[in-house]
Amino acid sequence: MRLSVATGRLTGSCICPFAEVQPICKHIVAAALLWLEDSEPSAAEPAAETAPQVPDLREFLLAQDREWLADQLLAVAQDDPTVHAQLLIAAGADPEDSVDEDAVRSQLLSSLETGGFVSYYEAHDFFTGIEEALDSIEELLELGASRAAARLTLLALDGFEELLSGVDDSDGGLSIVSARAEEIHLRATQASPGDPRELAQDLARRALTSELEVFLDAAAQYRDLLGPEGLEQFRDAVEERWRSLSDDDRAHRYQVAAQRERIAEAIGGTDGLVALLRAELDTDGDAAALINVLLEAQRLEDAAVDAETLLDSFGDSARFRAVAAEAFARAGRHDEAAELSWTNFVEQPSLGTFQPLKLRSGPAFPHWRERALTILQERAGEHGTWSWFVEVLLWDEDLPRAWETATEHGAHDSAWLTLARWRAPLDGAEAASVLYELARSSLSAGQRAAYAEAARFLKEALGFVSGADAEALRSQILDLRAQNRRRPALQDEFTKAGLPRP
Image (tube, rainbow, N blue to C red; front, side):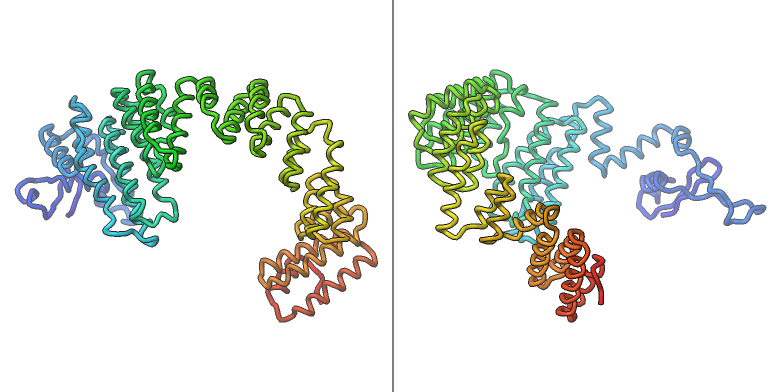
């Protein structure tokens, strides 16, 4: 095809059948939008210096016959569904009747076809196809066809459920497209809310059965769209599903229980959720969940009162005692919090139980501290777990005792690094010696990253010493270089760190 513009007139040639009988076709018009032929340079000016003469396309189009322009637009619209829909909408048609929903549905269904199984290496292209279908659905929404967009996103979400066993989803592609489809559905529903009861049925059915956990937070996200009538419909569907489950169906009971809590909160706020939880305190997990909800809502006194009451039923549970101790501590009842935390600590002495003992005991912690450390030290001696005891002392910020214990019994490298940096202002030579040993340990890995780490340790160690101690450390570093002269990567990392060279 060839296109030229001269003296305000558009001329061109094209090989399409339409151009054989008409002076201009849609292809010529489309090309004019993208590229315009430069006018001939004048004889007085070098061709290379001639400025391109670009006509004003709008002026050109305004000068054309209206019937011709209409024919060109219709020809373009025939091949472009989006342009076709835009023209219909501009003419006053309902957007829902203007778009080609069937074409987008076909594109979506085609994108969901696996051909058997989609391997990891095929998954990227597969999900790209789905994303393109979602692009088309989103385009419908932008054109104003929100009800069509909502229907198609539900179709997409149902299709995603069927892909769970047909696609290698190692990179989480299903979660990504599901989240996007949910987001489009929410926007589409906000644009055209529709009947709240039907919306509730659509949301509840999927939220209660989805293995992808779609519409997990639908009760909160769609609350204003559902309104009181839709929320009641949603709750009724959830309760009906709850009653149909057997006690052995744990996976679905967990899923439905989560929806019961969400719908209770959507309808009644924190009070509604608390009322539901208080009505069904069957396990220590139920009791702990109640206390946590009250704590998150900053209802500290209520949390402490309920915790005190529930201790009679669930006081044998370390899990519940930990939550109750938190409730007591945040309500200022530190003595009760300390007693519960101590019980948990004695049952299982560890850093994990020592931490809440300190954090929840308040001013009374010194009373419990030495007793707890004595138990931990005895346990370390019995089982040879001194490195673990050092970690407890470091967390408790008792570095002198941690240094003494590590020096006598040993510690993990990470603990030694912390201790060396603490020790440096007191005794730089001792601290440097620790870092030197850490560097030697790193070298044993035999990899460049380990060599770089060793170089950092040695450089830091040099900053801890001076005089004779510094000279001794430099000599040790030179010895390390000599011992590893056949490791060019090590030599390179040491040099980059500015360490002594032969």
